[in-house]
Image 1 (cartoon, rainbow, N blue to C red):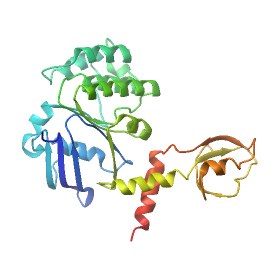
Image 2 (image 1 turned 90 degrees about the vertical axis):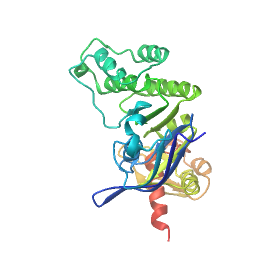
Image 3 (image 1 turned 180 degrees about the vertical axis):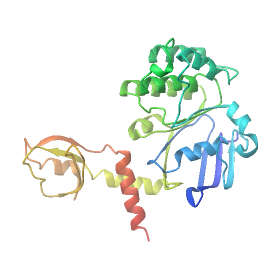
Image 4 (image 1 turned 60 degrees about the horizontal axis):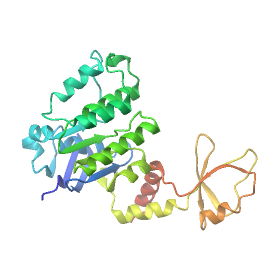
Length: 295
């Protein structure tokens, strides 16, 4: 069976600013792919090219076996897209907005609708203008996840959602995955999307980072614990400060095993410590440093 998405040598620039550089990507049917990367890496542009909303400059793109340059409407009929920067019709009630959104798709999953409505508990009788940012995102998720289509492209679906709702949505996406739906999503919550996705791709400066380079960056991060010292405490020997966060937390690089180094920290001098939990921003900085060091 052909892949759901097949991209080879994709380039896209806006004016003289290149956004996507020789992007190659294959997504199998029924796969849940996570795409991560810093703001401006090209994630949203990639998604829009896949759906025919933005024309490519060169390269080959096939989505559900179709070319977005000539069959964009056919692709979008079989796809649900949640943009990262999105809006809803504020003058509508939540119920009116859903009726409008569902009107573009021939079928929907009523069981999924019931689960999401129950979990989100939205006041659908109220005008959308009265909703908070999180409530609007839940409404847009209802409009994007309930139609029964082949492909779901979700640009930061967890935007403005609190942790409990993010976990609820994650469970629903897992259920959709078991039904054979193909899902491509981006997120700034690295740990959560990694736990959810079959595969993770990191987009940096308009191109996907090779897996070997990503593995090296993650290995480097294992030697970079976060530690917040109490007032007056000093950093023990064996580590150097890499960054200082606004709340006073230090990101440090240890000379050896970070757990062994933490055991040398005197009792009563640490408010918090974190080891082995990579964050997207940290991964980005290490990858940039590796890129700058490359010959």
